[in-house]
Length: 337
Image 1 (cartoon, rainbow, N blue to C red):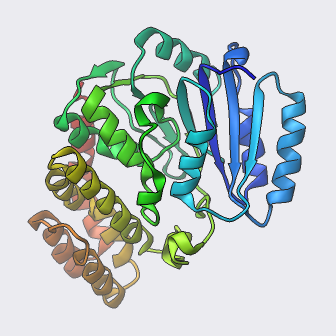
Image 2 (image 1 turned 60 degrees about the vertical axis):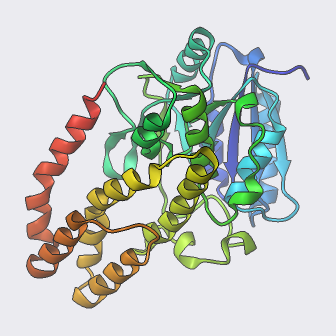
Image 3 (image 1 turned 45 degrees about the vertical axis):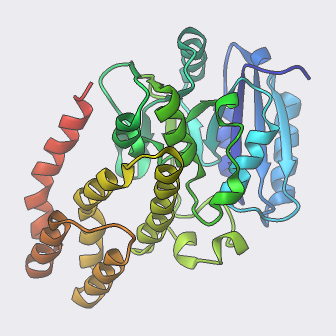
């Protein structure tokens, strides 16, 4: 099998029906230049997943590679495993419960061939809240540098649709990031600082959330049930512990200070989690606030204001009060380019 131009690399864990839907969404006129790699992370449904992928591969015009980890590796190692299996010049990461929009893959490949970026990302539709995310008003190049890393960090949180030139990320080892669950953020930050990026204004990913994560509760996640259950109000805090650790790794390795800007923006964005926690009553809300303040970043006056007003007035009133400036902030960010 000759090397390909693009490797669509899919993490898989325990979601055979979602993976089937994902695979069926991968359509392109460049089938000879594309490969699909599925790395199944030793889930309870591994046999059913293997059978389904084998059937799909027999019917697909695109080459399909199926890998089963003999031992559950967890999120970060599985991303690293996919990277090592890919033969493509570019790696297109995709979660098994997400889909590629009709016609988008051809536009992605055309842009990669024309722009030749080290990193490319695109907008996605996030079904649970019926919203378009990672969205700007036009396609544009992003200059390399620390400012780019700070500005676009949040665009790396969802790994589906992140496309890396393989040679630019070959040196990064997932082992260092076990239990962080954000290996792609480190690769994103390092790549955008060194080489810049290209934003393609083509709706590419249909993102679906089912409240579960695409990996098991293995030793690498310390069987953290708060990570396993995305419906818990504490889940986002647990995930942000890993994200903060990754950002600090990046700052240390690249002589940067992205964490300071991140801390300020995190406080600005903290309202959603606080509002959700407030709905569980004052006692649970106070405990959530305590956990939030245990994160390895300073919590700004903005978050403290959120906390105080929510504690007094409740989330229903505050959702109306804070909803207007939030919309204005998002509009300003989308109009940045």
